Image (tube, rainbow, N blue to C red; front, side, top):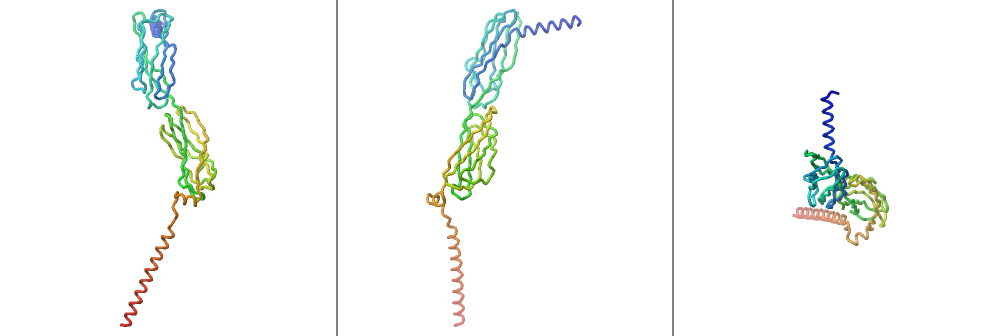
Length: 281
C-alpha cells in the first residue's frame, strides 16, 4: 500500500472512531395500544477517550401517528469518557391508529474535540390491539319443516382488524342445505360480517354450533367454538303468534273463479232471454 492509500485508511479509521465516540447503548420502547401513552428510553454511551460535549438526542414525530408528551429533544452539556446518559421521551398513540410497526426518526448530535458530528436513524415502535370478538345468529323463517336461512354474525369490537375469518357450522336440530364452511375474509374494527347458511329445521330445540377461525392484527391464529340457542316454532304456533300469516291465496283464487262463473252464467241467461223475446216477437 502506498503512502497516500495508508494516509486515507488512517484518516477513515480516525473519522470512524470519532463518529462512534458517542453511540446508542440501548433503546427500550413500550408496546402500545391505540390511545395509550408510553415511553421511549435511550441510553447514550461515550466510548471515546475524550469528553463528548453538547450531546443532543431528538425525535421527529411528524408524519407518524404519535404525539410527544413533553419535549421531543433532550441534551446534556457533556458525557465523560466511558460514561453514559439516559434520555426518556413520552409518546401517545392516536386512538385511530391501526396496529402495526412504525418508525420514529431520530437525530443524535455531539461535539468531540471541537468537531461536530451527527447521526440519523429511526426507532421502531410497535402498536398492538386486543381482539374483542362477539357472535350472533338470526333466522329469517324459524318454522319447523320449512326452508330457512341462518345468518351467523362475526362482530369485531376491538381496535385491530380480524383477518382470514372463516365459519364452519355443525347442524343440531336442522338439515344443512348449503356448504358447511364459509370464508368471510376480513372484518374491520367496529364492523361485522355475515356467513349465511340455508337450512330446514327438524325440531324446535335447534342450536347453532359454529367453529370460527381468524387471525388478529399480529397474525396470531385463534379458533373459537360458539354455540347459540335458537327459538324455532311449529307452523301452528307461528300462526298463533303472528310470526307468519295464514296463506289465503286459495280463498282469493276461489273467489275469482266464482266471479268468473257467475259472469258467464249471467251472460248466458241474458242471451237466452234476448232469444226468447226475439222469437216471441
